[in-house]
Image (tube, rainbow, N blue to C red):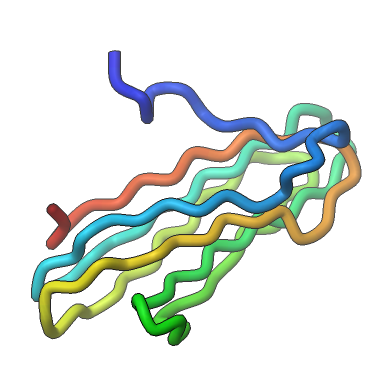
Length: 109
């Protein structure tokens, strides 16, 4: 069993609505997939992913909004040189709770 096998849940009682992760990207294409699933039929959830370099420059930003159905969004990033990427995952607006799963593939260490 791997850590990524279990989705992370955001809920109304969750005071922390931002999470930070990092990974090392190699030259080439990096794919970031975000899956968001609402826990109730009539909830509104919007989860964003922001990617930064170590100087704090924003490299990519995208989000997934769901109301009643699960949704997936995949974004790609072209990397020129090996670098550490900081990833911020945030819940921007919510009414209810949702789970998300994020995967990073491609040119990563």
